[in-house]
Length: 361
Ligand code: SF4
Image 1 (tube, rainbow, N blue to C red):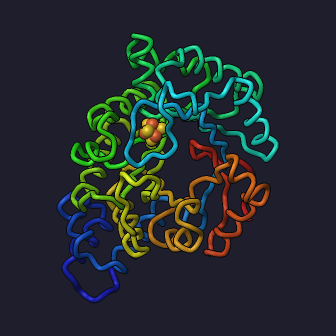
Image 2 (image 1 turned 90 degrees about the vertical axis):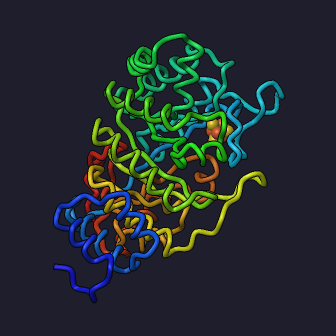
């Protein structure tokens, strides 16, 4: 029973809460004209049905960016360095191990390995790191690594099929993949964001193959540039269709672009717009169980509101150099406080959404 004054979006929201599937046209109507509070209410209701109502989860992992040399030139990226200019870096296997040593000492049992697309690195470089991390920290340390564009580079440098690349990485220790590098999955926006990056078809092909080879993960959207609202919905539809075929996404995360370069336009996404998109995401992606919000990007105030607007997870306590310096050991405690202050039980989870520790408050 929906308890609000009748409006044009009511039939759509009632249908979704009765088990119907939101169409792209309906989702776009909600984005353009839907009442924010009604969407928020419906998304929260859906979240409560799909996940334990009292719990909110978080996880902890170390990000290791193994190189910043990259030949993709995304217009929004300030991380990459030109290959051949000698100003960037490539981490050695031992440097990666040292970074993981620090994270393990802080209680993390998961690594997120990602870097620029650097064709000068041989395939063995990646295999050595995966094997060394598993050898040092044990087979239970979870390694999530490599976005579609990095995996495509491995196809090129090895001449192997993507399936063969994935099986080799798996036997070296790869456990799951991030659905990274999606940003906005429309060809028009990809021409603006990163003309040399994976096309929509490539991104879908790589993720679908990962899922088929037992490498699940997450998916995301990054919005707040020149994309149209219809393109946001088109992106969600690409993800939902892929998930219908594979079931390989544990979660979906709506992010907003952060201003990094002068070449790329970033607009101000207001809190109501972010929460509206998050709510529509919860309602549209009926086949993805978890919706994450990122307190690292959006801050604790918006993150707290998101937990009442469709999200059931605050994403990750990301341990990396800058974060270690600014948050240190208190980061997990802060995450748990934020969840508790918003009225939920904090539960620590693994990257694959298993309960990670008996930490129910
Ligand atoms: S692929 Fe990654 S590292 Fe390379 S330019 Fe794009 S965002 Fe930056």
